Image (cartoon, rainbow, N blue to C red):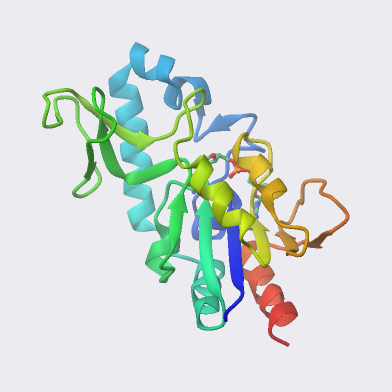
Length: 226
Ligand code: NAD
């Protein structure tokens, strides 16, 4: 049976595709305060700004391409059962060809009702507007988990990590909780890797590959498939 290789990816995974991370930018995300554009309070204060912010992210995402790191992970499906748990809201893993991707913090390509969270829709193109409504008549919001909100897929993600034979953490500062705690669910027998040019401090069992995503995934492949 194939080994289960689980990837936990963060914003650094998409940096080489031209999508900036946000640590390192004074806590600002694309020149916005995070509490203005990624919190329920920001949404309550100014829906137009929040919609515009995610519209810009969505437009930019469609103009970016998956990088060699995304493509290398997709290629690992030939040798492993690969599950990807990503904090990223972009769709670059899917566009590179990965087939099992769980988006812990939601997806830029989707919208959600503000009265019934089970009503989730695909967004055609890049724009979600004031006045776009769900089947029950409420304004649609981005299908994103904001700071201070529950992470509905956390349990499913923990279950995936707890069945890993190999866990590969890529491009995350491991500062955003509860996502950062997922690494602790790796079973004792699992081999654990961290790929990051500026790796966060981690336990001694973790093999650190201090490189960007593209080069790091190439080096990972050499470790796993010599
Ligand atoms: P973060 O911004 O806190 O940390 C990014 C990490 O990526 C850092 O450790 C950095 O050293 C590393 N990095 C930088 N360049 C890299 C490269 N070329 N290859 C590999 N790693 C590289 O990111 P986070 O821990 O994912 O937390 C950020 C939160 O912001 C997440 O919850 C995510 O939802 C959101 N976010 C998403 C995107 C996206 O969808 N692409 C972009 C920005 C922020």
